[in-house]
Image (tube, rainbow over all chains, first blue to last red):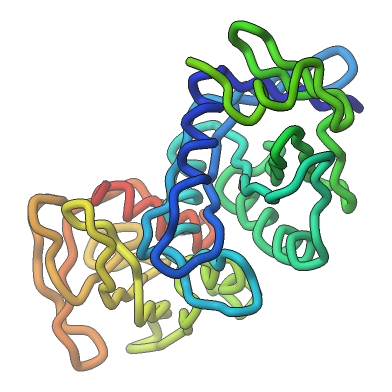
Length: 181
Length: 110
């Protein structure tokens, strides 16, 4: 099964800007982005439709991780998924170049929180996306499947179109990390 | 319908201290710290979820305080020796999961 995520350039810029904002105590930021899923002949197309910014006071202090989301952040994301037919994706950024991989902490936490979205929006895929300075990767959990499936293709829809296949992008890194409006 | 500790697990993502309480054979879920956005600020409010029939509604969510400008026809109820406030919000059935019941009621406060 192939998973293809599409994000408009304007939304992608908003995501980058939000993740780059300093936080009073957290070392990094997280956002949720909702996607509308659609069946493809050989997989699923995920169309990004909304950025869900996390309020400063919905982060919790925790010296063991770069960013710890509190219950208010999850309530907001779960509430949106409850009220709208969407797939929810947790997005954060690793400050390096190359294909970003989930850390042990990333994987352990996503295994715990992703299934909670099925309690409010069952039968939809949900997951996580990690950005780097010049690439991105994602994992999608599907109902009734124990292991997540990697997102094999990302498309940033705009001018120029940016395609990321298996972590390798089609244009210069500078364009990826600082796309012009 | 009676909920079990397993049903609480998902709800604890929203309220980590959620626990069951009982009064006159009714099951409640105590939510000591429920984060509710009020006028753009996340505010901690104590909540009490009744995941079964209460006062003519299939399920109800009681709060320790009113949310200004949100919800309609607020009424006071004394439960477990404490006064709780709730608003008129129907059509959140008891057949849903605890998380869905809670979010169904919080929909009115968005």
